[in-house]
Length: 231
Image (cartoon, rainbow, N blue to C red; front, side, top):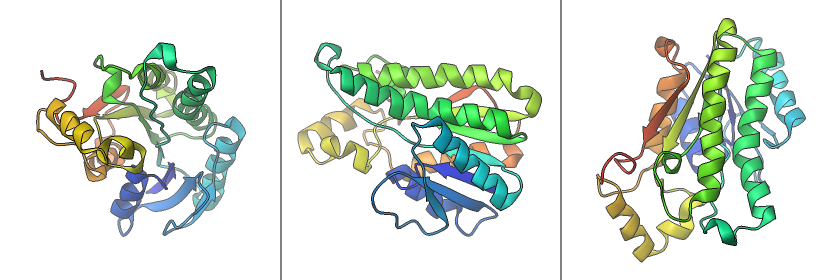
């Protein structure tokens, strides 16, 4: 399998790469940070830029000949009520989360066929959580985009799905996980009384890109320890 991963240097991305190394997956990784210590070939990609994402997909084509899976992991998290969010914070959140997903759909739809695409949403798009307006509206857009793309590109056998985590212990969520009061409150919100680990999300992504599971498209898979489905 030939797999492209955008956002491979993040917490979930690194775990996914670790889980795929040594399997039948040939990997090309995209990152957008200052330090690149990824274990296999990688390229800098600005996921918010249509042409940067397209160039990355084309590079994968040149390298592998065909692409079997594309995983897009960029995300951000600003927690504050809508009336306190600045114009810049809104634009940044939409570009990092929604525009990056649209860039992948745009490039994959033009260039590829017979491919599984996994985009990231959040459990906060399925349940009303205080101070989550920014991320909820951006990721809800990703879910709508995924369903539409699943229909548009079905004729090319391109499958689109989203994964929606609850709170996962990564660098992105350190402001919560490093604060013991906030962490304990968050744990209580999850039915299983614990927050997630990158492995929990990697497991679902690997399931969706497995060629054996090729009759799944247009779906959102919530992996959140019961956060959005229990009270």
